[in-house]
Amino acid sequence: MPSLRIRKITFPHMGRYDAAFEAVMRAMGHIPVTPDPINRATIETGVKYAPEFICFPCKVNIGDELNGIARGADTVVMFSSNGQCRYRYYAAVQRKILQDLGKKIDFYIFTPQDWLKKFRELSNHNFLVLLVKFIGAWRKGKAIELVEQLGYYYRPRAVSPEAVDKIQQRCWKMIGQTELRNYFFYRRFKRCLMEEFKHIQTKRNFKPLRIGIIGEIYSVIEPFVNQNIEEVLGRQGVEVTRYLNLSHFVKEFLPWRKKREAKMTRPYVGYVVGGHGRTSVMHLLEYAEQKFDGVIHLAVFGCMPEVTVRPILHKIAQQKNLPFLSLSLDEHSGQAGIQTRVEAFVDLIRGKKK
Image (tube, rainbow, N blue to C red; front, side, top):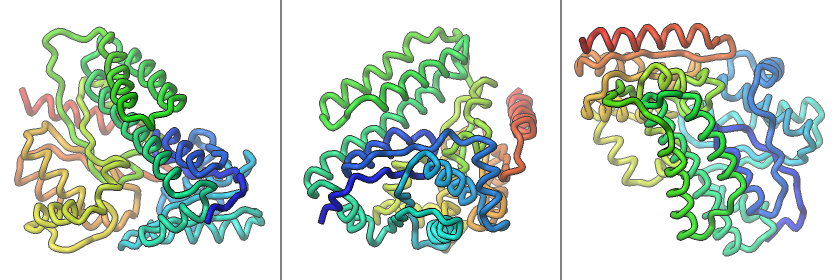
């Protein structure tokens, strides 16, 4: 049954998908309260109240939620899982922390088992209306991913990479302001986004290096956490490829996707390790097969699934003669340190190709 109450709902950031999450909240008939962009204050707040050894994304989530509550939210929405990764505990830990801090809010936890029930419980619309509106939110997410991919292609080739940044910001603003429920309008809108990038002046006869990104989903998707590594690489003449995004994460629950992943990775890891550990192995194998120039592995410090597969990733990279760099990220990571290691890695690849 519909909740018949207009709530002010906040949610943790997840990369650049704010516009899609806001559309989901509006689809349910509520007011989205988006936290401020992640910054040092967000991190410090999360670190202050979170358990010391909880995963870094959980700390950032707590900072986001407290910021959203301070901005007037009366409800928090958080997704959970049932896998081996500690992500399955995030929502429960966050709810307990907010309760201990005396926050008078409703906390909704969506799991793979009851997400549909929770959406219907929280929604002010009937199921058919909700479904139609959700389609628009999904397309916003896909449009966001398209703009990211166009940035990966044009940034290393652009005479001025700053021009790519400006166009991306303009496109993300357009996505946030546009309803995409109509399929034919959505297709025209995507063409408009692509046309925006065609005005960029590019270098002639320039062939960029190709580097693939793999790892834990939050550290891969969230720019503040990974110190904008994709932009750093683009400015160094590297075309980035990242298969792992939010739509990929949703499609992972399809049984044929799971079977494909298990089949590809079986010679190296014959069991489920949780999180995106096995996915990292699969994507590394795909990058090696496509003759990429290198691969960068991103994981938050102490992430058990990624720690488990890291030696396997190193072994595969050695077997395939593929340059490989693994970076651990936490609240102590600094942009200068990450940028120095990435620049050295790119120089190593260029030297190897010569």
